[in-house]
Image: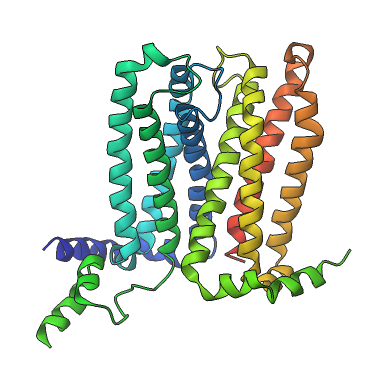
Amino acid sequence: MLNEWLLSVARFLDAQDWSTQIHESIYLYAWIETTHVLTLMVFLGMLFVIDLRMLGLAFPNVRASTIAERLDKPMMIGLVLMVITGFLLYYAIPVRTTQSLWFRIKVVLIVFAAINAFAFRARMQASVNTWDTDPTPPRHIRMGAAASILLWAGVVVTGRTIAYDWFDCHKELPYAMYWAAGCVDEMAAFASE
Amino acid sequence: MDLYPFFDWLDTSLLADISKAYGGVFAVVQMFHLLGMSVLGGMVLVGDLRLLNVVMRDTPSEIVIENTHKWFGIGLATMIISGIFMSSAVSLKLYYNEMFWAKMSALAVGIAFFYLVRRPLLSVPHEGIRPGVLRLMALTSIAIWFTVAASGRWIGFS
């Protein structure tokens, strides 16, 4: 049901002229992807500085709250630009991307990373006054920072593997893989055999 | 100096055997390449944006800059080691790729600028340096490293 709906949305986007024009342009797609990588450097760069401080591995002589608060704005600017360019990349190739197992895992990891970020921020705000100047924050803060780095590393690697066709719908795959990748037509053919 | 023999050797090395045969290993190494770039970029941006008085204005710029050096080095080393592995998959193709050499040139300029200009200059109290010089250095640094990242992505398009 969900797979059918996602595919119909992707096919609707795919039928639009702008989607085709971005996909087939000589330079525009490349520039959007380049901007995506540059904003990744801004967003992840700021995130890593904050997470490394929360792990006690960087900026030990600067208050943890100072790092988190002062770098929040540039990090969010990077995130917004990354999301916009990311959507444009999806918009240029919507059907294949929707049916990419790696893209789906990437979206799930982004959701987990967002949940972790909100939980991390709440935990930090609740207790930061007791450890703000400590070079090494308490264990639960370090765990949140480590989870953040691991989740975003997962987002990066799954983002990169979208380019590989290992589990594309045209390949011969088990039914579970077709389902996970949202290969609606292949699932129907599988069921009719 | 012609570096062709190095690229020719790399093309038949054990690294090339692994990078050509195992796409999954290549993707994971590429992840480390991007993470190394992000760590390096984060340290460069925090330091340079502080010099430009954009972020962390309530923390002395000397402290901010000093704290970025170690992780800049770790990010750079991660980028270079993973980059050599990635190059081994298509080393002879890269040898003839102009964008690859543009990236290598930008990287060499970035490393030289960081270790021979920026770091020595900023090792003294920043009060003694003209604000215009600090701003120019920060903008140059950001421009160089953004060029490294952008030209790296364009290798795949050229």
